[in-house]
Amino acid sequence: MRRPSLTLRLTLLFGTASTAVLVVLGYLVGIAVQGHFAEIDGDELRGKVELVRHTLAKLRTAEDFASMPGRMDDALIGHPHLGVRLSASDGTLLYASADATFPAEEFPLRLAEGLPTSPAIATWRHGRHSFRGTMTSVPTGYAGMPRANLAVAVSIDHHVAFFEAFARSLWISIAAGALLTAALGWVAARRGLLPVREMTAVARSISASRLHDRLRVETLPPELTPLATAFNEMLARLEDSFRRLSDFSSDLAHEFKTPLSNVMTQTEVALSRSRSPDEYREVLYSSLEECDRLARTVSDMLFLAKADHGQVIPTRERIDLAREVRELFEFYDAFVEERRVALDAAGEGSVDGDRLMLRRAIGNLLSNAIAHTARGGRVTVSIAASHDGTVRLAVENPGKTIPPEHLPRLFDRFYRADPARQRSTGGAGLGLAITRSIVTAHGGSIAVTSKDGLTRFEMSLPAGSGAVLSPM
Ligand SMILES: Nc1ncnc2c1ncn2[C@@H]1O[C@H](COP(=O)(O)OP(=O)(O)O)[C@@H](O)[C@H]1O
Ligand SMILES: [Mg+2]
Image 1: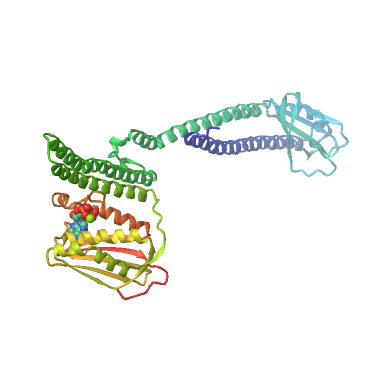
Image 2: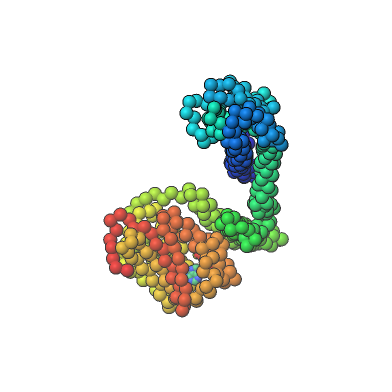
């Protein structure tokens, strides 16, 4: 089933709320109007009772009493809609006006013995007509008939007709009002949701080539600002990843181009004329060297690709970092001698992790440090376990300060701070990327600082359980 749209929901909500309010209002207005009519009719009835009372009070003698019907007719002239009936206490009819309609069985107020003189008012229907009337006992001035029962009724057809017409137009107005507010609600909801549609349009128009597009947050209503901001931030992250990815593939092509064209050129030159076996051998050695470089780059990249997909699950064993560093020092012995630099190690600490991988991570830092230290310099490795449960290993070397703009990207693949100088020395710029992914796989982090001719790489790893604590 299709879910109802926000516009539909808001429209229904507006419509229902306004209908409820209008119905209650209409009901109250109806009650007020009817109350008003009842009051007018009551005043009229009381007036008529007074009129009859006044006429009867003037009867003194039997003759007066005999002329009563004529006097009553005179008094009631000019009051069409009015019905008056006078009866003796034994029920004999004394007087009834011309159009008095009081079918006794339908007149709801029956006069009992000792009825109070203050009139109570009843409303009833007779045939197609409606009446309001009252019954009361009135005194006369004639001693032979001191009291008489008086029934007075007025036709309220005109009020009933008015009220029916009024109620009809009231309910029509209420229905129209409800429809109108629902329609207004619809318009308001559509207008209110306009920014959402604009956002949708922008989102739709975004493609890989237009990742720089952003939603204009300042033009949106405040309710949508967090959504738009989050959306823009997502776009920025996507754009960044996308840029890195395309940089990466162009770097990759670049990286492979040089060794491949070296091999091709050498081979072409060698084939241009016949050579001695020694010359061929030399060309083949040189090709092998280039292929070796290519193969190393490829295997580094495969390693990184695996690391990116979380496939590098280190086999955990307790690793004494100081011992690993000592062994690495031995491994780099020849390199160190050639570069005339000194190596120093201090402190100790152990972590749980994969020996080969950690050795590779530290080795990358060490070989970079040795390569970037000026002759006669000293590379220091310091290990310290801190109280927050981490072990820090820092490799520090004097050398050219790395310009700060390079520092954030140093761990990116193929990134070299000084490509012109580095390409000749062999590295493909993957060493630090690999180091970082190893450290990350071990749940640690790595950072670099470089100032005043001192460059320091510091990795921080979770300490192995039971690690020796030594002050930093
Ligand atoms: N100790 C260091 N001193 C100065 N620059 C360094 C140091 N270590 C790394 N770098 C810079 O970082 C870049 C990336 O290092 P790395 O990823 O190991 O690649 P590679 O060693 O193959 O060039 C290097 O090219 C170099 O510019
Ligand atoms: Mg390196």
